[in-house]
Length: 278
Length: 271
Image 1 (cartoon, rainbow over the protein chains, first blue to last red):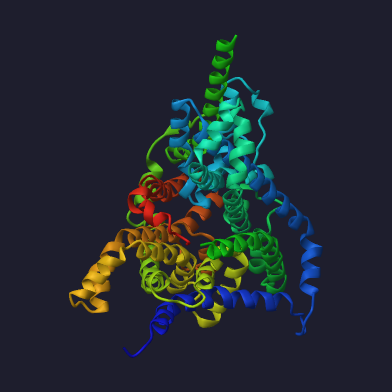
Image 2 (cartoon, chains in turn green, cyan):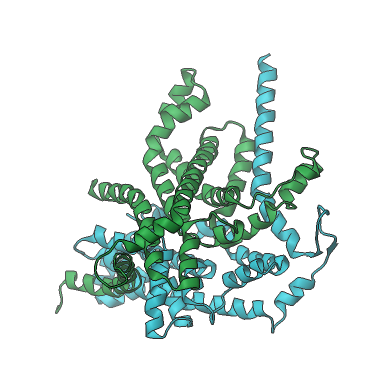
């Protein structure tokens, strides 16, 4: 044999790595360099100063929206996965199981279009409330602002987090949960005190992935909430399309990297810990 | 008293479930209504007149939508071809061969999905512009393939990892070459997982908006871009019909994913 197994392995994996290097690592370094280079060349923080001056409100807005969306997604996923695991009413568990996964593979842009019509002032949600007599027609308001963004994110991401969480919950030892129930603990208490601590890592990973996803989505803030304030993804697209201002756009990009870096570190740490486990 | 309490709880649970169904199905129902609404304006709670006029407009052979559908499917097929050509060898190396720093390589394929992507695409578009491939199908296919590679590589590695090594050894023992063993034993056994990864990549490409928005415009108009333009232009019917077209493969995949991805393969994904 002319080449060793190790060389063959590297040879086989190189084309894939090359694509990631060319279309991810290279543009990533490009954005870092561009963000830290001044108008006359050389190291400078000018782009960050300008980004903060123009978009400090949107940076804060983005952090709050994404954190609130992740918290609500986590809460909804815990309720769904908890019901699927500990629910005793067959009919309810069965219906929930059949329903909750629907948005899983629906693209964000389709979810955005759904919400754009559903949450509008004259959308199906307000119309249904009026028809049920819960609300007067004049009370109807449009939810197509920050509330719409949060609603779309939670609607789209909850099935994903719930799916991973339900999988993790199904894998834990039923005996502890049964023991807790037999000792008279309520199902809520069993879920919160016995089941959830055991699946925290999986919940965390799913939420970290959702966090990064929400920081990447461009269609939802553009389509669901038109006006200011808006998410950083829209600001970046605007800096490029309206001004060709790469420095400020890349500075905003670096800020989104930093926001997700904290989250990504948690993810990678967990990945490495799993790799080290026997 | 106890009886009343349990009845109350069941009623409460049923109410919550109904509210959940409303939140989940409502937006989709609104989309479906818009696709068949010929006229719908305030203060009417439901469309004023129904019809398939916009469906005919969208599905007219010469219409924008059919051209966009063609472009989207063409790009998605090419993306799958590129992704599989790269991920079958990479997945085999990760699953079967002794590879130094294996964990690091696994993470490298995850990176494009683990970073906020808008800032990356801005710079990809800049590089592509210099290379003269901005606004071309090739550029869009490369971006989609890089993004989908984590699925195809991780699932391919899991699929190869789940193939019984004894079968490969048996083939080698009766005189098959390593290449022959791979083509006639390992690859066919891993095929269901690889098909699943191909479907994943196909859907990712079909649904992809952000990358195409920066790299493909204005020449490459995929379905998501058509949907975006129609929605921003206020044409809710065309936007809703386009959204429904994109919805069909996504929902079908959600319903059938377990047929393609067997549990033993699924358990190995990312490991």
